[in-house]
Length: 117
Image (cartoon, rainbow, N blue to C red):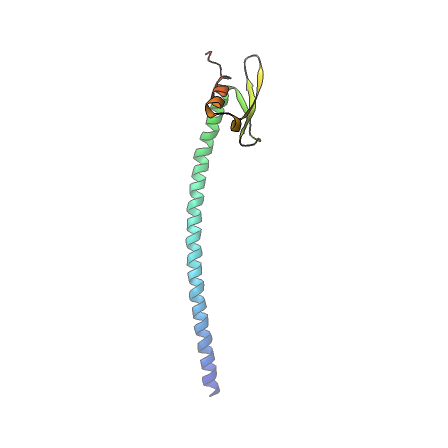
């Protein structure tokens, strides 16, 4: 009778261990799936970083060469701040975009750009 009790206990422990193993295998599969998704997202971010950022830097440099404006980036979102370097004079720019229309802001900025080529 003692052996049967031990066998019954061992069988119960074995079933518990089997169910725990099955649960852990499912968890492992879920983690592997999540890892693959994260790797795919990381790959997309890496592609965006290598393609978008250099082109954005190029565009920013091109705008600087054409407009001769050096922007300050540490400002409030509604404030355009920088310096326009004209042929004879450096002119500060400080425009509160929340107080002006978009076309007014655009006109003001374009007024700095020389049309003499």
